[in-house]
Structure formats: C-alpha cells, structure tokens
Length: 265
Image (cartoon, rainbow, N blue to C red; front, side, top):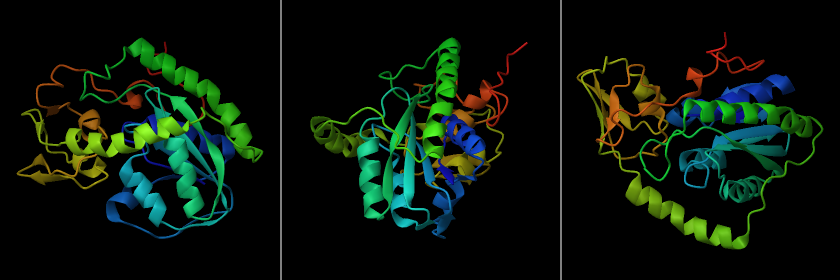
C-alpha cells in the first residue's frame, strides 16, 4: 500500500505513479491527519510511504501521525521523499520511526522535484523550463524504484553522516519556531470564499470568517493554501506579490499512467 501526504502535488504525482506500476492501493493521508483518524491501516504488500521534505526532514505533523497510527499486515516499509534538491536527514529519521514501530526498514529513495516554497529568498522559485526538467527526470527514475520495491530489494539513497545529523536535528525546531509564523498570510479582495484553503490545511490552521480565510498560529508552511488557491487570492505579506504560484497540476494532465504535458501540441 502506498501512503502519501502532498501539499502542491509533487509527492502525490510520485506516489500515484508508484502505486499504478505496483498495481497497489494509494491512500492520501490528508483527511486522516486533519481528523485524527487512527484507524489501523492494513496492507498485505509492503508499505510505501511518500513524503515531502520540509527543512531537511519529514513534516512534523506527518511524522507524528505515522508514529501513532498502527500499520498492520506486511512488516516491510519503504520511504520515498520529494524535495527541492536535498532530503536532509529524512532517511535517518524514517529508519528510527520504523524501528520504533517494530517494522522492517527497507530504505528510501529521493526525488528532486520543483520548489514550492514561496516565502524565503533563500529558495528562489524555478522557471517553467526548470520545473518541467525536474518532473521529467524524476518520472524517468520511477521504474527503477518500482522494480526494487516489487522485488523486495532495499532502496539506497545518499548516505547521512553523523555530523549532518547532529547539525540538522537542532536546526529544524529553531527554524520552525521562529520562521513558521502564519501572521503575514492574508486573503485579498480576489478571494471568492470557496474554502479550499481551509480544506487543504493539514493542521486545521485556517478557518473561514465572513466568507474569507483567517489563519491561526499552528502553521507548517506547507504552501497548500497559497499554492492551491484557484484565484491566487492568498498572499504572505508583500513577499509573494506578483510571484508565480506552483502546483504540479499546472504542468501535467494527470497523475497516473504515462506522463502527459498540458502544453503538448
């Protein structure tokens, strides 16, 4: 069974491609996370957990959910990470999580996908051509990862050195505490009150007041709200004004089967 969380479609794309090729079930964990649904998840095939990387790790809310929910049936667990170029210590923490659950860690794979983080100048958004190149490159790697999973072979990615672990572990909580503020988020007059941002928030951090979204302070900076707004009505202070929003559905026609570009003639 393939389990995933995805904010702007990168991880969903990889997860559904893998599930399609494995002829396996694909489950979006968003609603389970939002509602605190801890119903055990059972799979006769190995679990394949697909996750984005935020600040060199899995999203905290996803890791916490996986720690609590019971995975029954097959004992083997694979991880697949999508990132803007660096999966950090995600693999080391995934291995620790799997061992705590008394499962068998089968390694992880990393896919370099387009960036979606609009809120910092440290991570400039890429051009449409660069986004397409990353999607294409990742798409071409999927069969190899699928073949290893099908044959129950371990996935192998970049080795995580002890120094890398020691430096990153304390960095993550500091960054999230001081940088993951939701205060600058606001909806402009373009807002149509559709409520999609509220439904997309994994932490229930958005509420609709007078037909407009309002943000509380439990924010993961996942970009689900600002990138998925159908009318681009959400801004983050002045930082995002005039910036192109990213979501993979702008580039491809569907998430399963062969890769089909929207601009294909």
